[in-house]
Image (cartoon, rainbow, N blue to C red; front, side, top):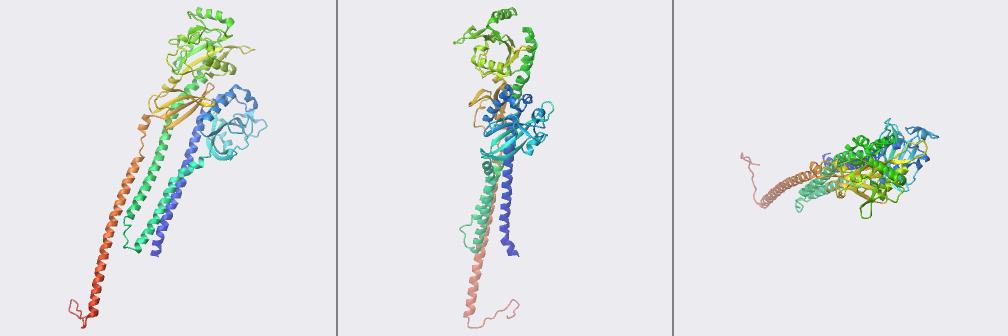
Length: 592
């Protein structure tokens, strides 16, 4: 029984190592899959957070949405967002017939139906109100408070894909009225899982191979004890096993360390970029709307009234100036100029810049858009009277805002009152006359957003390097501002990007790890490598010493055995050659 157990012990040990390696490999692959799914879900949640919930709640889920400026704007923003996200195949907005979208979606549909509100880049390009035929039970459950989730991979003619689903909650009832789905190309998903499981699999095979080789060598040495050419193989094997385990432990710790740093930086970067997103959304959805409402309900607003009303708006450190820009026809120009001068604006005139950048009277247009009121007044006096319609960039934003009736941002430009070269965005909201019939444009309320100030107010240290860029269809992103050196360094691994949709534009706020963050989260995996190397060297040295002692003992036994054999041979020769009897007597004198 004992010899059988001795023969089975190595096989059982190798089987145990193989089983443990398989379990470790499976666990590593599952962990990698979970992390990739969590990253996908986090990206989908950032996209969902950038959407205007109140605007989405106005969608009817019918073909009538296609003609609405709000629908076209959101779709254009999502198109740019999809292009900016690596491997993103498409973004979908879906509503449930039994959800908060209710009445507009229920007609002729079962209560469990899931319908498209918007489809961007998925290939099928479903229209508003089209039935989502492949809606899973989890997707249907998302409208009942099941929460965000990731499902897939799925397969179609374009290849495998995985989708992150995020419920969008109503601003009033806090129930899900829509679900955003972001589809990611999963062709390299399995490859990434294979690479994740490769190190533990190779470690397992190497350990099993070494155990088999070591067993074969021990058998060989046992059968030929005089062979000593491989006397240091035991120490070599121990050292090799130690190095393999050290390498794997260092790799594992490095992976966990990097993941921990990514999560910690993700939380920090998320809070910093969220501040910028919130600042833009406040201007877009609150402050400009308040100022527009003020002009909507008041025909004649004096300079002092404007200054008083915009006093609290001037506290916003991200806005250079708040302005009122009336629409003045050529026929009204003279009377308008007189009224402005009578109101206290001495030498007021409607002006523009010529080809050399000099100030000249505005002319040649049917309608002018001069700056009439500005808060704060100090430092912004040069902008008064400037016709915004004289500049192509400003005029394009004015016309887009007037046509859509929505808050609209200009392309990056330099302010008239700017003394440096900092980029700014002019954000317009049109104001129309309160008329029973007709749609007469009275003018625009305006906020001048300074891109550099926006970043400076959100970043107070060097733990996060922030940059701000604007996306353009079919071209590279345009960098607007960066306030820390190295923020545009593409080599940084710790990086987070948040899409922000505001003013009809799609921005990206990028955050990268700064020196302060890296100092607080130093790499420590090298300590494990050093400890493992020392432990491996100590174990190999111990095995080498024990091996040398065993060799000495074996040599001593062989020498003693050789001496005994020689003496036995001499004694046998003597007894065989003696002619007389040999008497052997013990210590007590007895003859034997």
